[in-house]
Length: 145
Image (cartoon, rainbow, N blue to C red; front, side, top):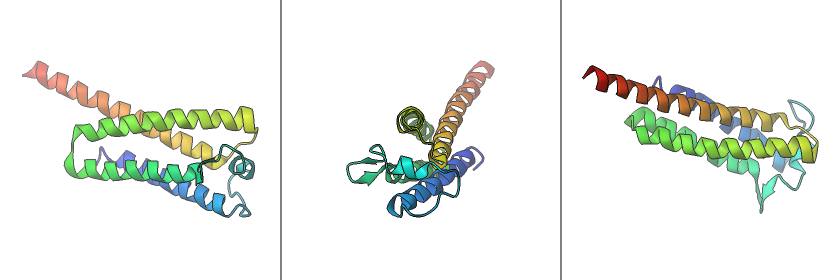
């Protein structure tokens, strides 16, 4: 549980954040609890892909990482961490692009979107740490053997 706990916490937070953003998208008259730029960001041309709000993709992204984290807790397969690494790399790159759009194109900042970007980056950094720490343990075992 110890190794999967950071992923479980971070992906749960991301799922809740994405749920709030999805709620905000479909009910645009609701107030932003954090910050004031949500409405501008959510009303921009960058808020959807087709008919789907980006927050819906966030639900899928964080839900998948949460599922994989729980699967890792049960199975302890190293490949799961590598999949989380790959997904979180893509998620972090997309988040960085979306932050760029908020700051330089839309010129409004959605605090929920920034929280999502920070959570995605955190998941990515934890996955890197786990991959390298497991390699170090394997190398130490090889040297000791």
